[in-house]
View 1 (tube, helix red, strand yellow):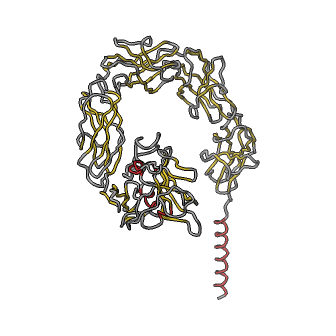
View 2: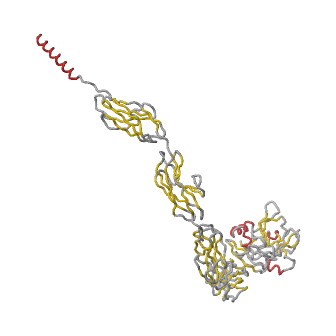
Length: 617
């Protein structure tokens, strides 16, 4: 048993010896490396490298140089990777920054780690201005040219602006006229505009980087001389017996400002500015011309023209013939004598249009712009004034009417008028018959009241005493019954307020009813004109705004005041039945010869004598 233990111990000693000796081996160390001096330094690149004199007992798996802008660069900074193994290697550094100091070391890596060579510092070169040439000027016109340049070297910094610059004196710079044509190196093209005719220019290409601006070789060129403008003639239009319209389009000023333009014409071909002409501004573009003073039925030749410092140019020639005749010119006479089915009007032909008027009259319709294809009268021939009688009209209807005149050129029309036929008649207690008219939902007398009796048959006192505060009436002049047949009677407000003044079934309108009428006809501002009788048979001139288009036929009957009778032919006054509560005032309405509005007011002196219009209950 002891022998067995001894043998086991010997065996263990032998095994331990072999195990220890089999594991014992030399451990590798980091490589040994030297840095090669930096060379070939530019603004953004340089060359270096290293020499590995010992691999440290293990294979070199990576080598190169590392660098940084601070000392002790490592492979965690910028690096190159330049093969494996020992020996000398070369490294190219790129992407450097201009005029910057860098710190560099060679490195080599094996399984034991990374070793570095000696540290070297160097500074990249500063930037230079670009190098470039200028392209010869071409496509030279009076005001434009083409050029450009070629940048062969950016000087080590990006070209941020390039183009050409020019001036009328040598050595132009970018403080003179210039183009801006992109960035970077290479060839570029430039378009020069805004040049002056027949002028010598000096030109250089330029390129700018962070170091400054460089210029190419200087070249010179001369712009073309001015020529006469280029233009076309506009077709002739709006031809009458004595006028026409044309014009032109100046498409090019020839390199010099267009100082005058227009059209010229003559009765023979090739007109010039020595013949009749218009003057229509300056410059290029489209212009219009109005020809006047032409002769009836004559052929004319016309051309547009434009002048600059080089001379006068003409557009294409156009011929045209003035009209031999046109439709007549005329006005429509105011409408009068309106009844339920008839009316009177006419016209005045002021020009026959160059041909005899063969037919004339008035035409009418229930819609606007009537023509001779609608209802019409035929009232002779020739120019001058004529009268027309309208018949066959419909009761209580609005009509539109125009005078017309026809010659060989066609039919001309006068101004349009509007009128309304009467709705019928009403008779008062004395047998006086009054025309009536419907306006909206109201039915009005179309004449002023002229009764001397109340509707119960009792007489109304005749008086002209403005101190009288009892019902009374008067004529414009006491006893002048002929006045009353046209303008009606004049009544004080006490008579108007009796409730018996109008025929049975009718009454003196209230202020509210007058207001409703005013609203219906379009308002107070023009209402007076629309309710006044048109023309000057009873109203004094100018009878402003009078159309009587609703058939109310308001007349200027005047009134009797504390100073006597006033305003016949100048104004019409109408009492309402409305007094102001708590006072001695009463409302009235008035129209004036020189105004188109309706006057709405009130008087304290209800003893004044005004006209009365009755309205149906």
